[in-house]
Length: 491
Image (cartoon, rainbow, N blue to C red; front, side, top):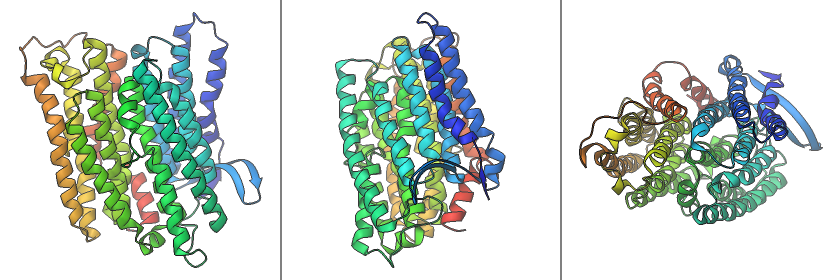
């Protein structure tokens, strides 16, 4: 069922109004400005949540902005897949904004202004009705996130932000080529359907060219190796809440673009007919293993987490490559699962930096006694990344494993097993160093850090476990993802 609604438009452009309003507030009104920033992030989440009952019924929401030509328009359409991603974006942004209240203490107007703008651009991409709309918001998000990476204005931050921009501009250029080729041969950029390209009217070479261009273009943000080079530099340089969003949301915008390409541009049948599913699964598997190996060599905590994110995002692509019912479920669900796990881990890293000044794992002996709640949350998220039940990470790996058998591609179970062992190899030493090395101290339960930073961290850690348990029952987010997979993959 389709219906016109202004709510997606309000959710997307509400941050713009807030930025404009805050610009007129006096400089000394920082407290009021922070209240407005948090209120807007909460309001955006509330607006998205208000659509939930109808989204669970499979209803889509439309809002046309304007037309360029008769068959090329800028429009919003919140289908179940876009709604699922938009719900995750607005929730993680709300947590990161609250966390930022005590983490960010300089150049706040610039930081919060661009944080709100990137929220707008990310929601616009999630709610895009077609590829041209997605491309516009996606590229706006690229330039809007640059100030978040360069925020500290150190030499490291400037270099990382410049590197990010170079990679992103390259990816955007390739993406523009893919978009033009897609429109030239397909004449339809809409996401409203299960595949708009056809092998009957387009040559195999043209179809493969379009897919490879999309894969490379979106692969820069999705951090597919060897297009990942900006990620290990950007995450350590950015403030921790921005790192949480880089990993939890911005990397996913690339993966989400590839999901749209597979489900809405090519369609599952054509994707398999061209044997592109196996290509994507192999590319994802190589990235998963290599990124985990690189993570093992990093002593800087945020850099290790960055390499971990590179590998984990490719779980989504592995699910797309296998394209069985459970593999697709696991891949699409991992969008939310990874955002919660890695968001929690980056929040923990930020608390460690603020409270102790330590950035390297080798310097964190006994830190579990100084920051017990923080390191408990870190341990929960880290164990989930390994796939320990009951956790969101376990659900992802279980579904991908079962899905590989459904697809009769048992080899990929070995990839998942190796990945889990490598996850353990680079996460367990952090937990061991924090709790079992160095002199034992009294637990610092009280006042270990600001509540504004601790509560979002605890909420993310709780949801990592909650999602692993609740996922076995019919409900959010399982129901939303199941609707998506049933529509595109079947089952």
